[in-house]
Image 1 (cartoon, helix red, strand yellow):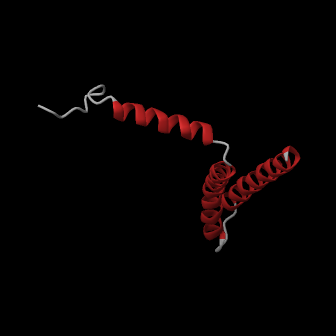
Image 2 (image 1 turned 60 degrees about the vertical axis):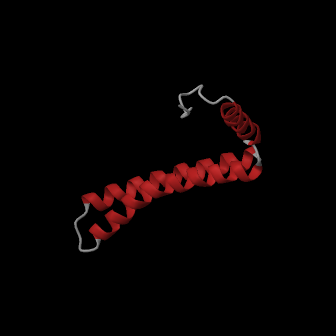
Length: 93
């Protein structure tokens, strides 16, 4: 699994580097279709890392790695509910 992650990480780095290079070339060159390509390159440069991040978050949640953190958060919320007034949420007069 580590090997697959490493290969995907390298592919992502290469993809981002190619998008940066394409963005630079589109900014330097001046043809009729360059502006459309420039906008597409800039959008991909922004969206690809966001999509990769979202994929990793969804993968972690689906895989169940964060079960312990989720359970700790639930326990914290339940303990806060049992102790009203601790955080100033007690609205009784």
